[in-house]
Image (cartoon, rainbow, N blue to C red; front, side, top):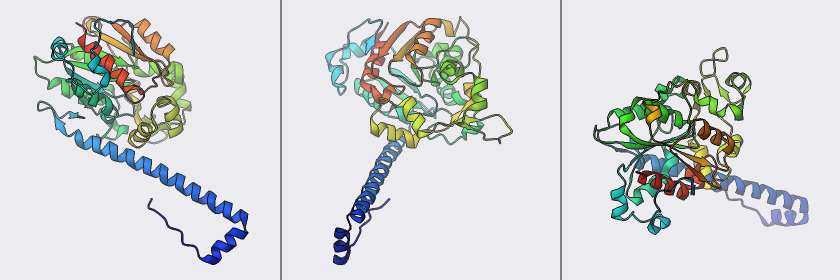
Length: 354
C-alpha cells in the first residue's frame, strides 16, 4: 500500500469547517487509512525479516542438504556462568569443554518452519554452540504441497536425511517443538546411536502405540469428532475424501500459540505459517524400550500455554517420565518468541548435563 496524498481547495476547507459531521467523517477515514497502512507496514517488515532469515539459511552442513538458519528447572546439575545472562558473550572455555555434544538440531512444530528458531539460533551461536534448524516436509520454505504429506515418515524426511548423513562419530541434541516431538520420537527409535539427548519443548512426547493427535485430544476432542466437525480442515482431494490438512484462522492462531509473544514476532508468524498436514498427526508410533526407552529425554513445560495446557504437559511427563523436567513461567506455546532467553538458558544447561 503506497502513500496517498489528499489535496483540498480553500473552498473545500471552508465547507468542511462549516460541516462538523463531514470533518469528523474525514478524520475517521484518515484514522482508518493510517491504521491499515501501519498494519500493512508491520506485515511487510515481518515478511522482510522472514525472507532475510531464509536467505541466511542457505548454508549446508557436512554435505547434507539440510538447511541451517544461522527459567526454572526441576533438576539442576550446574550453575550457568554470569556471562550467559547477557546473551551476547561466548561461554568460557571450561564450560564449552564440559559440553560433549555441541550440535543442536531444532525441529519446529505444526504449521511453523525453521524460521521460528531465529532468536534461539542467534543465542546458541553466540554461546559457542552449533544449532541447525530444519524445515520439515511441506513446512517453511519447503515447496512440497502439504496435501501430499500423508505419513509421519514423509513429514520427518528432512530430519531422517540429516541423521543418515551425520558422520558416524558425531551425535546431536534434538529439540522438538509441539507436534515436532513426534518426529523426535521417531528419530530416537530409528537413530538412537546418533542422538545424545532429546528435548521435548511443550511437545508431543507420546508413548508406544499413540499418535501425535492423541496429545491434543483433551483440547480439541477425539480425532473422529474433530475430523467431522472442525471448520479449519482442508480437503485437498475433494470434500468426498478424508481431510488432508488443517489451518487455523489468524484469531485462533493468535489465541492458541502467541498469547504472550511480541507483536512483531506474531506478525512474522502470520505471514510464515503453513497448513498443517493431517496424516502425520494421525500416525501411530511404534516405540521400543530397547531404543526409544533407553534414550535420554528432557521435557520443557510452558506454563501459560493455550494450545497444550500445563495440565496436559504434566500428564505427558507423568505417563512417560523423562530424565529431567524444566518449566518456563510466562511462556506461551511459542517459547522461542515469548521467552527466548529462558529457553536458551535451559538448552545450555541440558547440554552440560553429564
